[in-house]
Length: 253
Image 1 (cartoon, rainbow, N blue to C red):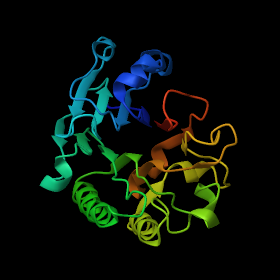
Image 2: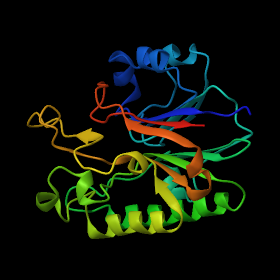
Image 3: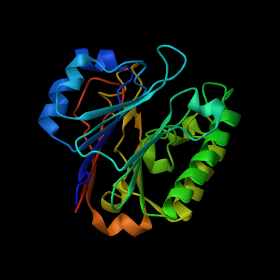
């Protein structure tokens, strides 16, 4: 079956900066079938990434140097679509959907509700549109959704839950939506294998947060129940540098 088995998702926080910090070597060393990058802040794919044997699919934000998603795929999809068909979200290049023989792969960069929550209503509208999107796909075949969800779901997903209650990415509304997503028949793949806290995918650049492991787990692989049995491993590549986020990896049977 010609489809990805090893998948990596990573918020690179600037594609050009990530290339300068070793992204090409990372791609070569991992040898994954699919790389889903978020927050690429680019309107073209660097030449260094075009010569690695992958098909490159870029969904750039209309606003320069902002947002955007990029996927590098070894196996050509049956079908590719950008966005959600809703202009306010699609202007920001946040969603890519790929169809393969036995599943859909969705690369997603969820909005940040921002300090003081000015973008929380926008984020919640996006969340609803994403749930509608994956549910419509799922009527045809299972779904694998990955990316930066910009929410720490449970207290075990954040180093300092009490201090961050109500802050962007840890509001009651954002966490409740994540619960609804999982209750709709989706599985947080990492939590199939690891139940305890202390594992994070994002750390502030301030106060040596990464060295002290004061982080948030906001980057996910979420799979629909129908494909859960094929998940062989899900992990955070915590030691990989080059962004304020760590990559996350999923392996399918």
